[in-house]
Image (cartoon, rainbow over all chains, first blue to last red; front, side, top):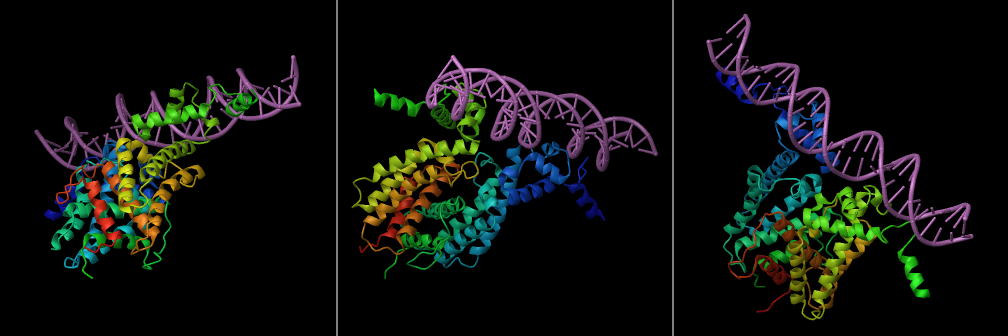
Length: 210
Length: 210
DNA sequence: GAATTATATGGACAGTGTCAATTTGAAAGC
DNA sequence: GCTTTCAAATTGACACTGTCCATATAATTC
């Protein structure tokens, strides 16, 4: 009973109607993002969908930018969980791990394009926010650590390789979501193009003898 | 005199005050973009800076999206001119040409970040616009044709290589402008990182014997 | 000179983010 | 138990936005 009371005290502070409006607002924001894109995520629309007054969100987010940043942090956390899980148990197979990391990003971006795109809208979110940076770092670290674990000698330093891989993944996704490319197969390898573009890079990263 | 009259007729249509308000609006739009970012480019601000009423731009651009698309097309034309000139006379040195193409993009993006970023804001511009697509194609074609001209056997098809290069360049720029990376040197090659990341890719694209 | 037609104007409207004053309601102190 | 207290929610307002409308304007065409 003591622990129950403590829990209730932590969750519900003074004057709250919903128990946790902040959480509700984030959920409604994500829902609007998915259904209408980032343009649909207005403070007033989020408040409407949460059933509160148009300025109620101001108590939890001092500005729209802060609200969108909090949403973006949740999205990065989601992506971090997926990528980390994808490269688990592939530490000794770096090339496969890179492909798995990339595949996870591709799938996430094409499944939930609005979520992926919000992550990179600098004018809408605060890239220096601590929570956001932490989650973004989890994604980047997943890539960096799998490169560190393998012992192959690289042509450039590990960070440069990580940035190269991450740049190519993000650049391809970004342009695909912009409609600049169609999903297509590479005619030589017969692989989906998003897999094929990584081949050249991986071949450049890892020396081969044959 | 006949040709003079014709010229005047073409330039100045009925009812115009400025001679060519459309051109003035585009120039002021670019100016606002450079100084204040895309958020500063509002129809009313552009009109104010051009010295016309807030609804005057409507005669030349039916919506804000159309205006921003026209600005983006001008920016893509500028980038196309630069990249095409950069790879001229390097047709027989494909690896150097790729570096020159990339270097031009990097320089353009870091010199005029707001211009570069506008090019990829799908929610603000119409990627299907003919004029825009034409100019964007000139950039992509510059890269594609320099890959076509060399006779080396590729691991993947030419388009895949072009997309890989273009993706990496764009991805790196995008994240650098977002503040995710600092400008740094690769510790192994001692090259600026934006040059170093291309090395791995180029090494993956072009077979080497030694 | 008159008619036409594209262009510019000023006003209006709904929607936005944000601020301020007020009300509400649950926890804390006596 | 009652009052105090203070965060949270409400209501109203403001300036700004993009877009639409009726009107006025000015240059070309007849």
